[in-house]
Image (cartoon, rainbow, N blue to C red; front, side, top):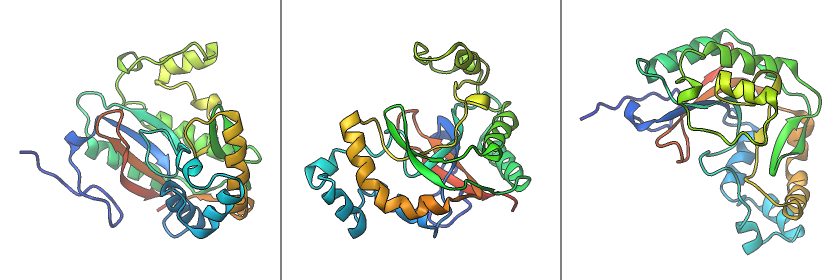
Length: 247
């Protein structure tokens, strides 16, 4: 029988086993107690606070219309921005090594301010993005890819991706790093929804903006990195721990 160990750094994260996870990812998740964290709990809990429900009702998305909004891609749970995309561990390394490397990596980096955010489209998804380019965020993500380059399996061993929509440069990044949107192709984005058609996206945007306008105006502080694990590659990812930058 496998021994389980508590690997989370914050209260309320359940103990878990190394064998539970097939893939890992490094995300930014908002610090508990912040306005963005409160919004995330409300939004991914089907926006059950009065302010959000009133906004969606005004936009004609109450009742069954609201229930059909895909809140996020099915294999992710909660409000997050990808810093290091999901990957499988190569043979010979384990969760303890990965966790130790992330703690050390985070301790040597400083928190980054996003500046004002805006509600934007990323393909068929709604995301929050900085209004102005933030090189410090891009650099943090690039450093994260480099710092953990020896942990993932070879990109050739990963599940194949549909590359028809990728540029030649993105295909090269996919071959080199296992993901096309890294390095120069990376953009910090906080995912809000799953895929939406254009009409639905416009209505959701209209309803969401009054709820998040104040948060967007102030921006947020990327002050920690969160390690997530995925049991089977298609199931919602679970937080293993959140580690403060510069701690």
